[in-house]
Image (cartoon, rainbow, N blue to C red):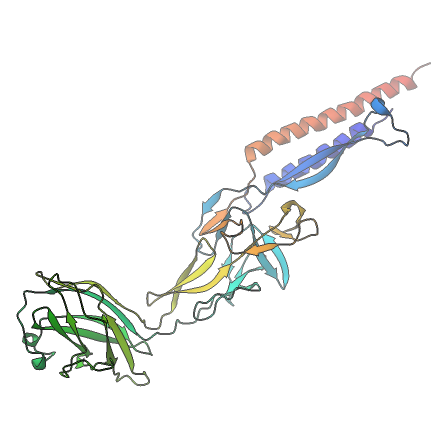
Length: 415
């Protein structure tokens, strides 16, 4: 009698239970992908063949496949935690050895590298101090904690509504400390090359119907025009605004440039170009609808976040943001060909194919969600049912061995 079928069934059932046990044990492991044992039958081969009279000799494990289905995505309080929604793997570097993972639970090392619990570092495209991403060979991502350098103001978008009901004044009488010599004014903070804040104040003097002379002060000191040729008349104005009878600005160009002399040691004198496009004149109170000078002071890194396309954006104490790097993802033609190395990491093999690397959300790759973690895709209910089925399968194969043993015993006892 042959015990081969029963023995192979016991072995297959045992391996199936091992895979189920592994799945259950990792039901709470972030980024884990469940395993599924796949079986194939076994037939003894002959030179001539047996046609329809072949009886199989059992079963065998054909392969243990991993199911790369999407796991549930849970919220996390760690801004460095990332979940991939869709296809792809995080590309990790462990002392130069490249691995791939779906577990996006990351922390920041003391050197500023983004790494997982095993010490492998997340790779991507680094950015320079100006926030320009160097797209090319992936590198280990490191968060630059240096202060953001200041940028001197150079432009000032200003949109006003001037009151046409104001009486006319003599521009030559303008005095920034005497409110009777100008019609209206507004001010905005601007910055020099060292990040020192200054106050640029603009004044509007109605000199005739539909005509306004514009003056400026820098920290209370009257500033001169840097426009070439200089505005006329030469009464200290930085420019003139004129309107048609519908209150629409007719001055061309709409810009005027003011010279910003600085008294702060080390700062470089600079100019600011004021763009008045959209400014209008109506019979209503003076108002400011747009006031956007550029430039900012130095800032320290407060926190950072990751966008859906993998960009790591730092937020600074001066209210500015800067790009610190970009996470990349990798995908494979045959993910089941990857070799599992433990610690939620896989490595490339000949069967998996070469990695296709790109930014999240492109080339069929999924998006990255910040402060999120992808849960294990193990369905505990289904695994418990599979466990019962595998147990019955094991018992049934044990019964075939028992039955064959009884038959063999009967033959031995024949007289």
